[in-house]
Length: 314
Image (cartoon, rainbow, N blue to C red; front, side, top):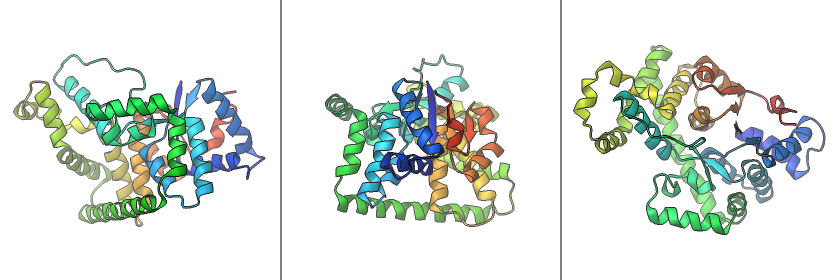
């Protein structure tokens, strides 16, 4: 089964067909084709945490519901797991490889999970406390994951929704400021040097996870340091962090200001690229991913147009 990531704007294009405002043309042909392909389990379009946050930002309740219903039909309520859970697994596997320890077997598509709640760390069954895992199991037994998502988008408290979106906007603006400060510090550096500097930052930000997993494996930080150059390339062996560093380096090397959409795009790509068959997104982000040769490294197709899916699953 193919795993396909769609940029939020692509979801909006399909939602116009769901809403009945677009009744002819390529999208009107494509949407029912994709519905049938999902039903026959040829393809799945999981949601990411970015999709959930951006859909929740839509203040028009009718538009928000049409968008949520479109996403629910094509995702079946499945999501890419939280960043924290993916990193827990990816870092563990990277350390197993680095120290030549037999790696545990992972099930196919382990990074895809039912229920939109699992896109968030506190409810991700891979890392959540046992009580939350049990609660999630009860929720999934009581309500289909796709219906959970639509119900949430339709019935969440509006005041709480708006307050959460204000907080997210503030946090994202602060992140953009930090990115711009880093761009200023590295203004004369090459893309590769920017990537290396960013990788060091990512290693420092995630050092506790590295240390905890080393401890579980019966290893120490001193043993990691003894590996020298092999340890220095560790970030490249952690897919989420590798894609983030490569995408961020290319974005920050470009001229012009960075906005919050750029931040969401990077988040989307480091979530989707390692675990998808195809990523369909906007021109600028796809171009950066192609320049970084992420399609070759992670064996994923990259597309700028939904039309590339026309008749593929007939």
